[in-house]
Image (cartoon, rainbow, N blue to C red; front, side):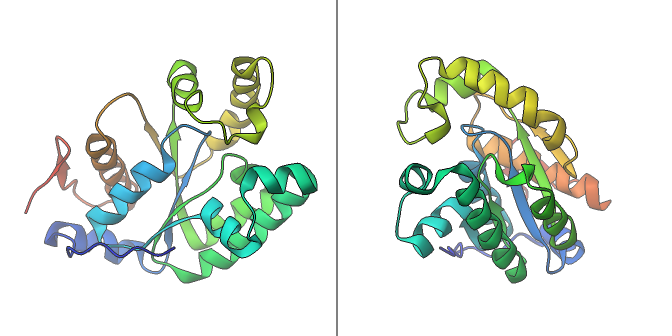
Length: 203
């Protein structure tokens, strides 16, 4: 749920927040890209609430994402996901992390475009494999060849993710560094002078 960071944003972020207005910063990308981890860091830097759409879905359904997939199938899960994200987008400004398939829904993309700014965390295959192999809660990867599944998902989804407002290449680096690059990219998107360097927020 909403987690408001304790520290107020630095003065340098004020113009970015002003340009953002009531819109949400919406993270999109494949599983393992770091949308939740980086999203939390960006939210803390900007003193915005952070919400993970998968956690919200689990909260309203009282079932885990894997359980929802197993019981209702992907089509029904995507319909629920869409409803939850559309509702969440009414509550900006905030930082919102979405599931890997959410941005593939045209109505969800339209809602994000209308109520937010989309940030694609783009990751290479090897990095994604390294990360997702550590977790057993990925319904789409319950397959004898998860690498092939990820390759297929990249081929299908990357052209759609590429329509995001902002793209940041994520990699095996400190979360603070990637988060700072996201804030810089958002500044460029909104025409604000960049205010973050080397993963550190200037006072």
